[in-house]
Length: 538
Image 1: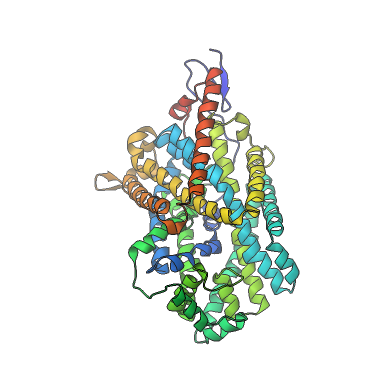
Image 2: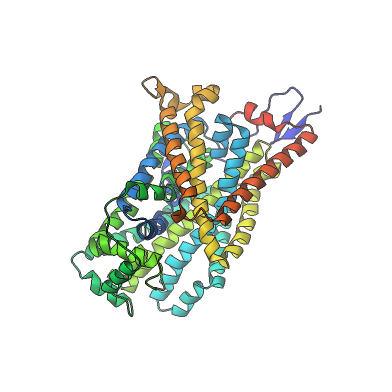
């Protein structure tokens, strides 16, 4: 057989596979990666999942434990991803870890479904946050009510989503150096301003008459009317339910643990990515900031101002339709109730714009690197791995993914109910891909001993057991429970047949492509099954 190109390399009948450099350069510091991790969790965007779903649908739900359990799962994930990431600090993330520790079929199909396909919803939902919690409130605050109303129409939502996708594409094509500057000097300050404004307003609201502020915000709705509406919906005060809290953790577990997002594709561009301890801290610190400061602290303050019982009553009445309001009862609206000053609305809106844009953008960066890694291993066409020599970015992968994202955005903008269900599916598939990687990490010392032998985490043990085995398998077990609950409990919305069909179709497309493209490559004398056996991870 003549030598044939595979992933930029030459291979003969009995040759060992080699691999050219990706073309990416290490421009991100660990601090950059940590800040990137905050935006990967969505920051303030994650508050959409903190209230009112769990409180409204599951009696005994505890928001505090909801957040803490998600963070506890995050700690297991941070250790696991720091372990496999420092051992294989290359573009590709979960695809790389799963193909090397489990099997190439698993490593292709799971990231294909969970990251390339279902991550298409996150630019759209990030744009939704930019629009509904950022741009529209900001326009209302400056008196442009007509423009604010237009933003919330189907057409307005699509236009803003298109703009966000176009900006993400342009930012990523411009390269990592430009993104680092924007993140440091624009995105982080805006997110910090929005978060601090929320905290300050809630602190200042202590001791005030919340019932008066609530009534003043509405034309014909009072605190007492909400209580009556909750009673009508069947609300009863109950004690803490661990089970009803745990079943929702799978949704938030798709966000707080994701402060390790750079390990899902970008470690080939992160300096000191091979340092296990520092990489772990680069995941843990932003996770703690998001979980404790950006989510838990504002929630505890809000609970102190409005009252735990009222928040539960409002959630039950809203979720059961016994109160009719023209807004989503989120942290942003509660802040407006407490302080209707337009300046406050503007500052908080800027924080949501930054956080929403951040979650939209990070999936662009990571999905393109996953596609690039698959291409380098010969599982996608070679041109997906092309990197611009000017910008050091995978422009072709970014462009293809962006075009598909625009098409999905057009569909979702005019089918909003289905879009929310797909978003929930996207969140749980984000949890699923982490679980599979954690399983691979737990088996890492045994399934890829040659790679593991030189891994920084190899020297850490708990007794005679490898540390990564303990943390990886614990994370996998926790993850498996959450995914099972998500797929079987009706309150979470994933038992809808349409959602299951969407999951099946996404996975099925991956199977068809993997088999079809593999047969095509084999017909040309190339056995791509050898890449994950012989191509080194670094």
